[in-house]
Image 1 (spheres, one colour):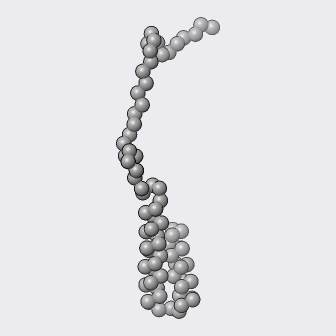
Image 2 (cartoon, helix red, strand yellow):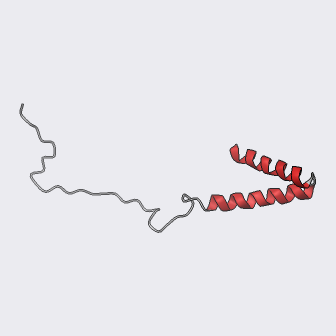
Image 3 (cartoon, rainbow, N blue to C red):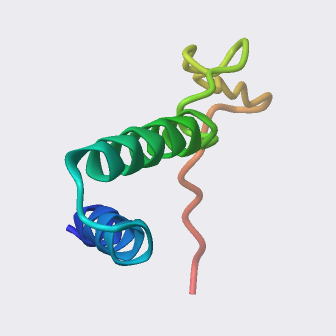
Length: 74
């Protein structure tokens, strides 16, 4: 919702500065769209680095008598 309000504010501001015409609205919408696409693609969540898609499951081995649940006498 907030990005739509920002796009509307950019279009309204450009129309107030340069006058109301379809050419101004078209150029501003195109510029805001390209800027939004660049910002979206540069977020860290979109860039996949090697090894990020793989899941590492940790396996633990215990050496001893095998009694992991020790009972203490009180």
